[in-house]
Image 1 (cartoon, rainbow, N blue to C red):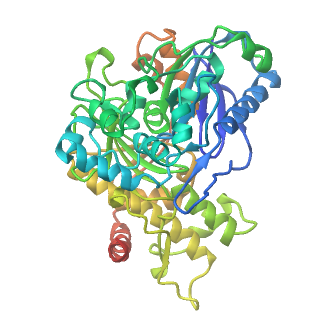
Image 2: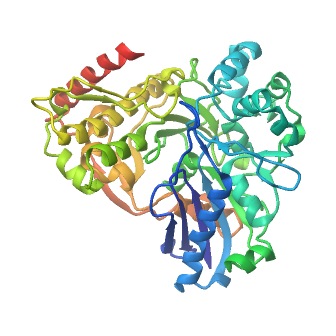
Image 3: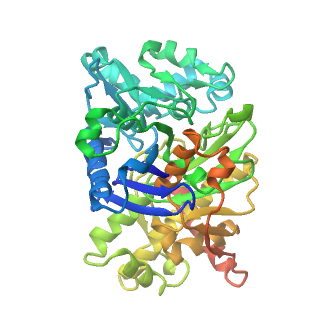
Length: 494
């Protein structure tokens, strides 16, 4: 039997087919090859067209089906991973009403701050585990306030993965995990939050049918079978945001386990069995994929740096013109730890929750025109991203996270020894790199949701460890000094 996983990313869509017995990837396809555009109509805004996601999904699926490496009839389930927090609005005909306001959009910060105070900070944190902040509920409130004619037409709201599932199946559903990432979920009352809905003036009719994360969220329609070639009747049996799904793909399911990723965003994600929160909502708590599975509490504690991927991409396109990422990584490795005093703050992609939703922009500091080269910029940008994750890592430790090891897929910035070793040495925590990614994790999650595996543990065992990076006791002082210099610069901008 074959399992299909979809990763609905900001930059592209990846589709992967996994053999359910061996758990090996049979074939993968990505579309487009270049990064998908993000529209920024105003500073701090970020939007994408959901129909673009769907067109890219179809193209990725057609590449797999038409490639001839798999028999479509053998696909028995579909799992979906998706970029978190995006707001999709459709009318009664399931037509998209406006571009999606995506995860790195900052327009709703003030709206969320007002809701935080109106609901009551202690009550919001204890029930929602977060400030409403700049999350999906506050983005919907922005539409209600600024585009009332669109809001009035809205039949259902969805997250990006809910939308792709709807296009495949014709059905609209969500989960408590999805609602928690939008700050719609009350963890004390175990239901959609009355406080949020009443304060913003939202009807609960806007919320789709709530199903478990691992469940039948609809089956592929005959129309889609005719268009793409995937047999009708295959269930979409798993949906989760990209960071909970990344943790799943690394078998990070239990308290004390930690996952990390450094792609479009940089994330450290820890699992706890406590319903806990950061008093300043700088790091955020959501329902993990296995929250309430077998009546267990599993909360994902998430640190996110919005500016990760776009910082590295900006350097590639604007500074390293003509060089690819491996060439940049090799050049960066030739520069000393600390980049000879050059420091970069990678905060140029919207307000950062870690900085209490401040928008301080990306900064290149201490640039010496007589000393520093493009190679220094390559290294300083990677160090700045790693230092940002360390800065938030300390907040997580202050909130009870006790890391022993960090698991990550060997992909994106973890392909760079400079980035990976910097993160290891500033956090003084080993990093284990595995041969997995979000699309493969989604495929295995879909297999469990469809009943192909008896347990989540059975679905996720058998990961291949590729490499372990241990702290280097001979150079830790160099990394710590570089980090301290970086934090002094950050404090000037906060």
